[in-house]
Image (cartoon, rainbow, N blue to C red; front, side, top):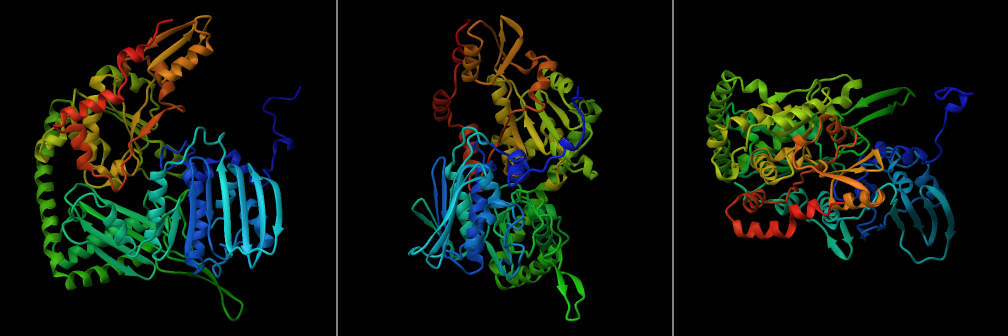
Amino acid sequence: MAEVNSYNDESIRTLEGVEHIRKRPGMYIGRLGNGDNQGDGIYVLLKEVVDNSIDEFSMGFGKTIFVTVTEKEVTVRDYGRGIPLGSVIKATSILNTGAKYDDKVFKKSVGLNGVGVKAVNALSESFYVESFRDGESSYALYSLGSLQDSGTRSGLREKNGTLVRFTPDEHMFAGYHYRMEFVETMVKNWTYLKKGLSINLNGTIYKSENGLLDLVNDNMAETPRYEPIHLVGEDIEIVITHGNSYGENIASFVNGQNTRDGGTHLAAVREAVAKTLKEFFKKDYDPVDIRQGIIGAISIQIQEPNFEGQTKTKLGSNYMWESDVTNPDGTHTYDKGPTIRSFVNDFVKVNLDNYLHMHKDVVGPLQEKIIASEQERKEIQGIQKKTKERAKRTKVYNNKLRDCRYHYNDKLPKDKLEEAEKSSIFITEGDSASGTITMARNANNQAVFSLRGKPINCFKESRKRVAENEELNLLIDALGVEDDMANLCYNNIIVATDADDDGMHIRMLVMTFFLKYYPDLVRRGHVHILQTPLFRVKNRKNKNEIAYCYSIEEKEAVTRKFKGNVEITRFKGLGEISHQEFSEFIGEHIRLDEVKLSDEENIHEIMEFYMGDNTNERREFIKANLRSEEELDGVDF
């Protein structure tokens, strides 16, 4: 009998066509999801198709793109050059095939890896593509990446271009639906980044005349201190201004790709703006004070961008372009362009300095903002220092945090990078809950921070009063973001509170603190709410058959599955769950709700509604949206 783990020639497999994409979708599109999160895979599929149409526009072909999106289906029609008719099947189904490797055809595109549209094909239950060229067309129909039909047509009056229609695979994206607010944001960003491009989304036309300046103005949730500074050069566009809120809010793009996780270009513009303003004012201002409350955007165009990860949300390139040059004598020279850092620095140094000399009305408000931030920071730092020293003397400091081995900001070898990505900190309240999580956690990448009672309501208090709060001071010290977001110790900040009134209130108080003073943590997707099961359902006929349910609907489904002969436990606090059970809920099958905050959302209005004095309005909202204990407890069986 053959061994179960035998390793022989039959163990070696070659995945044909797009089979590898279906086998390992996360390598190509990141998370799958159901469309409730703007980072879910169905939006990546949409982006990959539209990217190709935008690349055509960038090369001077096709000024309008028609995009039709329903809950389940997407259609994209551009009027570019159209895929060469003899290569339609090859370009949509064979990995590492495409024209974007040829810089003469596509100079500065996003999809350089020959994978994008193949991933859409592989992960769609139906994928149809038709290319139109000079009155003729070539089409192909696929299902789950497998070719079902293909052919050609002639004598057409269709304009040149490409039509793609796809329906994502329901098995991959269970219960998915496209949310139009996410789609509209994507479409608007594409037009902001490509002046002159029109995108017709479901009959509504989107077009930008002022590029990133329109993006910043349209998304501004507060009145800026001064009119936004708009700098435009070859391959670079920057907009900056300052508001009165805390944190930084700079959107970043590379070749039209929204790099939500930043990268080299965002780090370069943060550094360049601080350096240039210090030199302009001839003052040694701390960069933290210069960037406090900054609002803006940066877009750059690069010959061959090197993104970190297949989904292209963080730029890793260090050069504007790199090329293998063939010399007249036949020899080859490996030529590198300027580094992104030097390119951005040189551009900002010259253009921002010139702008400030020409627009004196901006100089005063800008310097006033920097000085105000500096004064507040120094005052707050003094208060925080005293608070921490007091906490250390009373031995509270060392009891708050149970740290993990690997951190998000650690310089780790490649084989440990995954640990840094998984690094998490659970923020919980009380000894019972924190003790349970501590015993259940993975000490390599999961830390626990224990709150003592309810934190202060930051919305109603001054910054000075908040700085005196021991709990929140020590929390920020643990996170490492007191001076710079780049020092963040944990990729995932997880608020883990009981599913009762007190737990919900603590959750809101912690969220108010982050939203007011550290909104970047939320905008960049670092803050989450831990979902813990509301019910344990045991099958009385088979005691080993246990299900943990996170909603009434899940409980009812399991009860039917166990034919009603069940024993139901309703969890009302984290301390009621044993650490053995809890390890199931914070391990591989952890359920997290990401706290979302779009650039255009007004933080003050959000906090006013949830934490302000509008008691009656909030009470009615809670009544309409919160289930009662009676509903949760349900019927005993």
